[in-house]
Length: 400
Image (cartoon, rainbow, N blue to C red; front, side):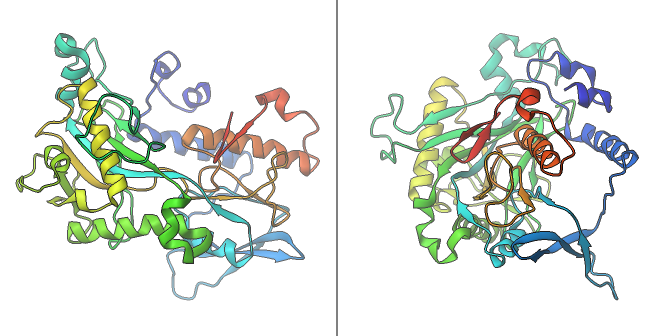
């Protein structure tokens, strides 16, 4: 937090209970980061795509890069390095395929999929604050705009026979809740549709949105086993393609009123307003996912409404789909050195490698790897754990 403030972040994040920078504030912050790194001698290459690794005798010697703008006459470049830290995002599907060509050990891992729900922010304020909601004033009042954080295990609570009981081991939870925010597009291929949410620093929009997602595992990927280690990726693609077809193309998002989704019907064809700017289309989202996901979402929403009366509302709108909550795979590495178990000199880290579940944990994973690599290259002789503490390995991620 102090580092954020040092590079231009608002000082209030040092004392706020739930600190928030805002998407708009990140742009100058990242620019300041970049200038600082360049002063330290770091070279940052924009519009450059890593197409391949240079591997000799089981050792990574560098990368092959190309101009991502595909300018006429551009040729591939070979760049030699002592080591390659692979800090890709969780949607680097072309990189995953490239790693498999080098026989890098990759295994599918659990992640979560679902829909993004949006309410009027005023409604969430009233549910959470009751009579104090009048003090919010779009985030400018004495009380901040209301948010929520929800985790439900399917089968808990007192919902009885309203909806068929589903897998007891599944969890449904809110993810990336954005008070005073908007629903945004995250996919770049019009045939594969995926959404997310964001809030600007003032959180002043009329809407509150959050993903409601259900855990899925390798058992759920069985129809895609022919894709091997990328079965989870194909699972994502399948439902992103279905969403794109439901939306009708041009990144129009399929949407459905929560009341209809719960009732497995599409009666409301004139949808309430949405913050999503590329358009929404009334759709049967209850038919998009397999029944075990749909039923888990329906049951969880019903349970949430018992704790937050008004959550099920004709003004609440579901958007499809949210499929990229975290990486669908994990790239194997040694626990102590962070080096790939398959190739020497390759260091897979962060969310795309399957070792983090968000921005902060990905950053911390990078810090640990940085010191581990410096030690490997005889640039650091100290004890990493003396600086940061010991990383605790858990299934699917690393807990710091």
